[in-house]
Length: 503
Ligand code: TNX
Image (cartoon, rainbow, N blue to C red; front, side):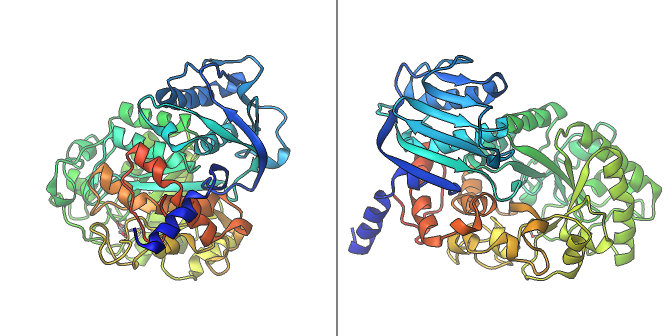
């Protein structure tokens, strides 16, 4: 081993589990010479409202430890999940952990907070705890007092299931992978030129015909309503809110191909399997367009327990400016009518949307007048600058997958920016959170998804969760390096960036 590599791995190996939690907690105090050991007699005790969180934790720990780990509402030592007595400062999503010689106590004000606490606990345990078969112990948890809560309420991951279709099982695996880093929103890009991926009963050809292909001409696919609801429930159990996106008025070739009447010339174009953008548009002057939008939003809202529906709105290069504004003006009230709040790619801000709408910034500059104006009117902005947060950009010139239009994004580039002070005139208080989008023109398999997301997704997750005062590239790269063994055990195909001292 070259001496510099050896030095790097020794440095990394020295990072104790308590110092390697990602995202870094608000406050971590080690309690020296104290360890709690998980054993065959450990019990999991949980308040009734936390039974779901306890069951998920038990399932993870049982697989690798082989212990029974019974879940009950009793009190006593072992692992205890409590919904009373938490410091009010941990808020609606935070938690406290106390690890003593007799047990691990996690307290929070909500089940979401307890779930976040259990994700920290997983990271305090040895990496082999993630194994899917029984491993030999010991299973030490280091003595600690942790108090933690997020910087931003919204920490998102987006998966483009339109350019390439991904099965419900693959989406669930991604949910599991991002939950470990306290991501709490999964944005599904459900429609684009190349495919429509959700059954809409009142317009069934959207899915059956519009969903029948993908980039490169593969078979595509779509989610039935039952499958989609199952994904939503799986995410909800992990305290992740699904944000469905139907992209309009552009990025609509799959819909236009499915129904001729949606086209201004009443002629359906053929399905599209290339990777160009900006060539399609719904027909803005036609009434049928808004019957279509109303039906789609109504059916989608009924499948959506979360507060948001994403209406896309990006790259509408085949729609005139006037038509674009007219379209957004008509669509936003439809979203409100079905009880949802709109999110849209930042072009939506040109239409002066109301303060209830969230523009999602995806530019590569640090100023955007319409977005700043929207923030000044009271909108909260979701930050996804393409040259920092886009998981589909190549890491460097030798990355086999990905695009380059927003530049190369190495791990440090993904980490070293401040979402609360990035866009001029859009300060911390005007930011709803951060999101890491994964567009899939070049991404076809689970391994591809993981290679592009890991390790950049945890970088974006830390920007969304941890306070800026804790931001440190040098400390982050050490913590990230310590995640490597965990990903190996989980079978996550991650990019071994040379910027990170992998353990
Ligand atoms: C731009 S970002 C797009 C997507 C592409 C992506 C590829 C945005 C809102 N639109 O349609 O997939 O670039 O990086």
